[in-house]
Image (cartoon, rainbow, N blue to C red; front, side, top):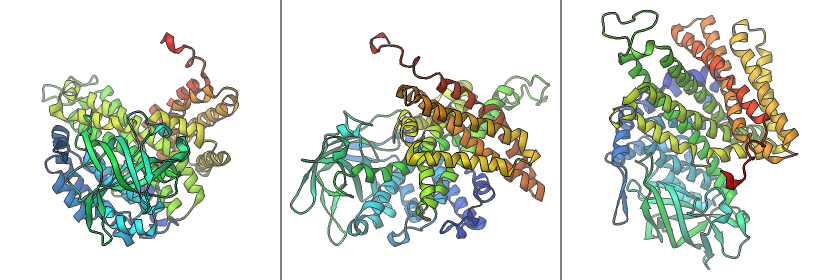
Length: 592
């Protein structure tokens, strides 16, 4: 059975030596001292490795089952969920007035990575609840917040998001779910939603569904979409549970992975719903949840890569296979361990450099969310809006690729379910699809985010890179290995943006055909920036003295690998982008 150990030391390094969170002027960050965050992360790490990891294989093999309309989660899930609730983990970064602990989002993100790496399917139950609660927190009335949030923050009640219908996914303007106004101000919701994660289960007393639908008589298309709170059980005025609502699970989807999460077809038959936010402004309210979910899905891609890497590394150290070409490293044994071979090292270094760089990128993005929300900083909000499709798309694409590399280290055993490696690959695959497929993320990045607010947010990103390069240009230890590759990659990103400005206006297909490459180009530059910052922090630690020089030397060696072997992919992506859309669009549909 695969194992997992929370990378708390690396998280602490990023939080305190790279991001220096306790020194930032973000409300609540002054309390984020190293000892405090260390205590939280250590405790979360224990739960991840001791409680959630052993259930990961159980959830994969058992899955969820439905009997007489009741959905049962895998063995052990219900007890583990009770432990999570008892520890207050679901409300870690939620407001105190609703029972949360009001810790920064960045700390919740670090904890979330551990839980997702240990058991992605399980962690989705509370993750979706967090997103639904966030939407109610921002868009709900005081009555709605007081009714639902205390129970959702504690996860006594869980939450879902209901967007997709059998005939429409990304194009939500085509949805058919209808909402009929009632005299008491409520609505009757009728329709069917599919792919609803955690749509029905046995771990909570109530499930609060957030459902997109169209009010009868409203505008056509996306302009007529509203968002509704539709509880599984109606809630009485005193907060107790009332009658069962007209919502039911039609079936559990049979999926490639995340078997431990109940992905449901949900049927709404004149179910009572309550408008969340304004009429016909449902997408605005839903995107509060969607944007949070997209950051969370990027985290899932990173988390699965980390878990797969840890197990591949142990296998490579233990498995004896062949001899080192430079001479035996295990002369008393029949063969050397796999890890002596350059191709295995290449694979492991690719995984290690991605997970550590991706973790820094994710946590930096989380600080921007804290700055935007806690500090009410519009610039930070704009920057993280720009980066959200990159975090979601790049981290999940690359995260999946890294699970495949990890699986490959095992050779034939990687293909055998007994060893557990295929689960990481299967679970990671969904992250590239849900919460907006990655092709859509790329289109959003190029079609909307680059030009948002006159392009000032992408210019702010370029300024961040330029400022870092300028401030450190005289640091000889950084220049050749880190600064020069980052500068070259940043120029590739700027050249790609310039191409879109010049050619996209002439022919939109020139820009859209290069959008996926641009998302990856941008992602590599972000990880390059993170690695340069981590290298600076590592060099500082070595120069000022440290009791653990191996950690920092290892960090530098890993960063040099990324800058030399992975970051140059920006040049390839730029060439693809500049080739335009003609070759992509050359064939008529009938000629494929």
